[in-house]
Length: 295
Image 1 (cartoon, helix red, strand yellow):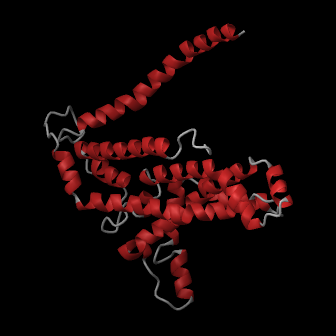
Image 2 (cartoon, rainbow, N blue to C red):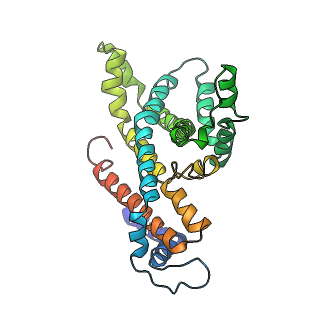
Image 3 (tube, helix red, strand yellow):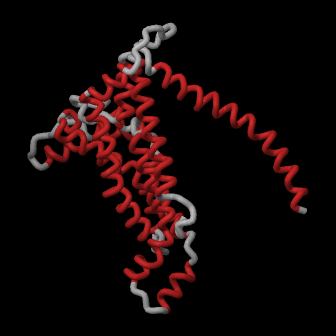
C-alpha cells in the first residue's frame, strides 16, 4: 500500500517541479544575480555596463546621509507596527471574535483599508493632509487655527505617514488574529470557566498561549512588510520633504530609477535583499522553529 503511493508522488514531482524551478530561476534567481552584478558598475541603464566600480557603490551608499535616514525610518516603521499596530489589531480581534451584534460589519469596516490599493490610499490621504483644501486644513480652520501643511513640514510628515501605515495594515493583522482565535477549540473556554477562570485569566492562560503561532506570523509579516514599504510613501511624499520620509525602497527608486543610477540603485537593492533574507532566516530559526511547543 505504501509502495503504491511512491510512484504517483514521484511522477507528480517530475511533472510539477521543473516548471516551478524554471519560473523561480527566471523571475527570482536571475534578477537577483543581475542586480548583484550591476552593483559593481557605474551604469546609467543604457547599453552594456562597462565602467567597473568595484565596491565604490557600496562605499557611497553607506556614507550617504539619506540612506541612514531611510534605514532609520524603516526601523521606526517596524517599532510603530510592533508597539501600536499589532496590539491594536489584537485588541480589536479579541472584541470582534466574540459573538456580538454587528461584529461582521465592524470586521468589514476595519478590513476595508487593507483592501484599498496602496497608491489609491496614499492619494486619498495626500488630499486629506493638503494644507489648502484637505480635511485636516478644514478642521483646523473650523476651530480658528492656522491650517497646517502636514506633508510639507518634516516635523509632521513622518508622523502623518506612520499614522496612515497603522490605519492601512491594522485590519489585515486583525483578521489574522480573528482567524487564529476562531480556530481555538471553544470547549477549552468552557473548561476554564468551569474551573473558575476570570476573563483576564482566560485571556492570559488560554487565548494568548494558543494564539502565539499566529502572533509570531503576524510579527513576521509586519517586519518584512515594513522593510519593503514603498507604495504608500510615493503618492504621499515621494520621500520628502528634505528626504525625511524616505524608506529603503523609495530611496532605491529615487536613485536607481528616477536618476538612472542603476549601479548605485542595484547596490541599494542588494543591501535590502540581504537584510530581508537575513531577517527571514533568523526569524524562522530563532522564533518560528518547530518543536518549541507552540509552533
